[in-house]
Length: 164
Image (cartoon, rainbow, N blue to C red; front, side, top):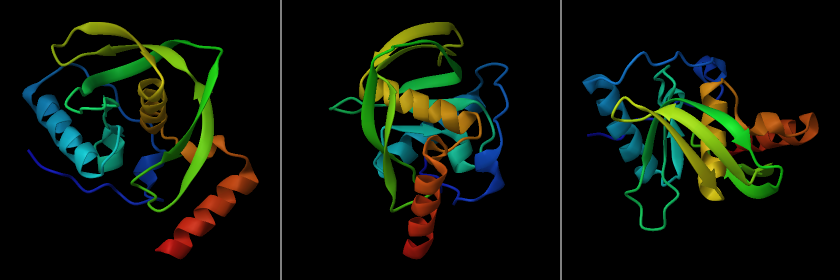
């Protein structure tokens, strides 16, 4: 459909929890399609609706090598997480030019409303797991750098401002 613009940090919508999705409609499918187009154009492995200014609990994740395997999620929630951690360099198109290495659970079990309107539960590992956790943070009004110490977070934001 179309590539949408990612809203720039510090837009207040990036700090606002998104609203739950009541059901899967044609409008929701259209938003998911735009989100996948936007994610592919970045290129990235996930996108949450608030990143493009849509304040709904919608996310897409595609960490496949070949691409084209995007999981469309409404109201995703982590119901179990691995005790084993995995570190990964994370970034966001909402604050371009900077990134930070974070540790998150290596695997998660996530429950969500899928594109058929059914509740689905999936076990995700590796980059899939990291990406879905990152997207759920966005849906909760959090950015990846909120997981850093205050000093590291301040340095990252200062570096991003210099790049503008």
